[in-house]
Image 1 (cartoon, rainbow, N blue to C red):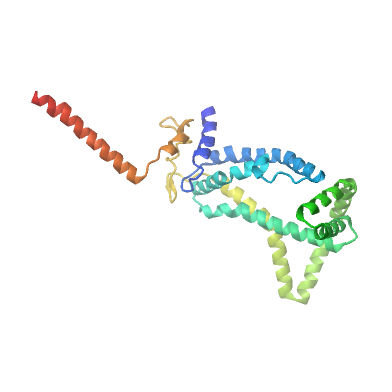
Image 2: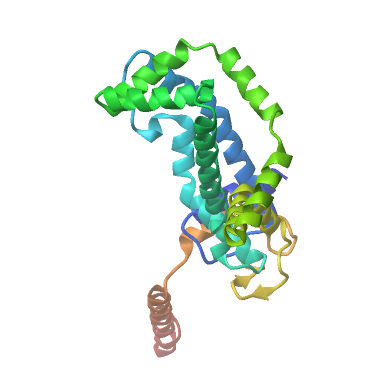
Length: 290
């Protein structure tokens, strides 16, 4: 049982540059959730350390590997990407679908930026609008990027965050979807093309991240295709399958390091033939001559 659990991690480590093979659901879901759990567990501590440096008006360490969460994220980026591509191959899907999480993050950032911009301009007297305006002023007059961050950290430390949270919750509770739909209908009645564009971009940027993540989750949960497919054979996965008894080998991942190129295979075959000829001369012909 322990060997079966360790095998996906060994495959993850030794196949970090393999974008051509296949990986089963077990291999994917044994590794990826644990990595993301470790990243999120270390994130609050890293954020607290950076905030402490800014509060003391000190530049925090700029090396991402100084922190646990960004260091682990960057260190495992290529192995996670290759494992995702192999999981897609195992389900019979193209590795191009591995771009779905990046699409979700990009659409989410655009949606968040648009929301913050709207929140800041819809009510300039609100706390959120005041924060954005004060931040822009501080960034423009402070004389530098880090000086602006130091001033923003000082302003945030002096702020009553309970009041900020109460106002944000109040704004969320007063949201009126009916007013937004009425505004869309009025805009469509005035200019159908403009109303259609507004509706399309609202749905695209609002639901796009969730659709992309759900589609990615669907692909990662698909069962393995039996036998051979366009990306290889399911039997050629030593990390998860043993020889004859169906049990995984804890050392199967090391076989990836023993792969030889076509030229090395030809040289090895030639050396073996030469060795057989030499043994034939010394053992057979030599013995017959005596």
